[in-house]
Image (cartoon, rainbow, N blue to C red; front, top):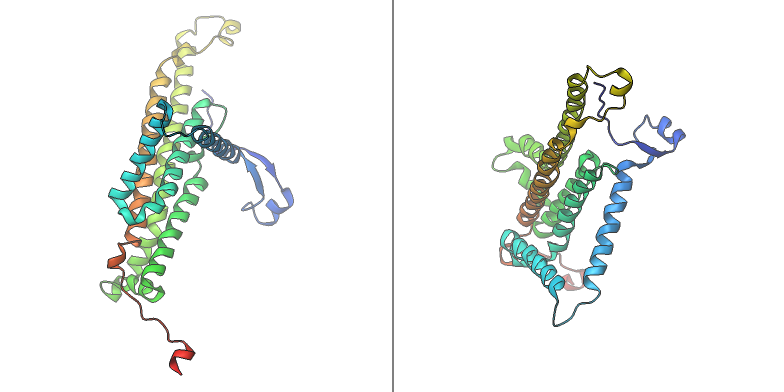
Length: 270
């Protein structure tokens, strides 16, 4: 059995830049890049097609879309509070991008975007940036720094590590589940192919070389339903839920945000 599990293939690369920077940068287009552009295009076309003929007397499709959008806003309201409904489009984008990015891998033509750590890490960094920005905006830069020393100064190193670990765990959890499922599926495919050849080893080599691996029929489909459909939906929901919890914690209700003293202007001081 010959089996290899590799990362995304490099489709376009600037060789000089790649060699100069030690392989860190220079890869312009990979399989993941193509999948991301395709998922983005699909979501844009779907959004345009589903909203171009809205009416006061909605049809079945519009009713379903409005129900799904309402469910999203209700989830954001229940998790983050009604004052944070402005984050609903971002949460919905992350959720749909994750699901479509995982499902596109079922085509066996395009690579799953969530099976690439760079994608989930980018989402986690954007979420972390939003958390830091809103913490500083609502409580002030000094209060944000002071939070690392609570409840006592000795806890500062652990608080810093915890702050860094949050986006790392978000990225690796999503990536690990999707990539792990792909590896297991590939291993089972290879094992079933080897089992087919072992079962029909009595056939002549000329026939065996072109004999289809019939044991691969059916069994991997059930695995794909779990790893791609069920696990993909679960991981997309978990990632979106963690995003809502972290961002919501940095954006409390307006009445809970302490008023900061404003600096007096020179004219007022005079």
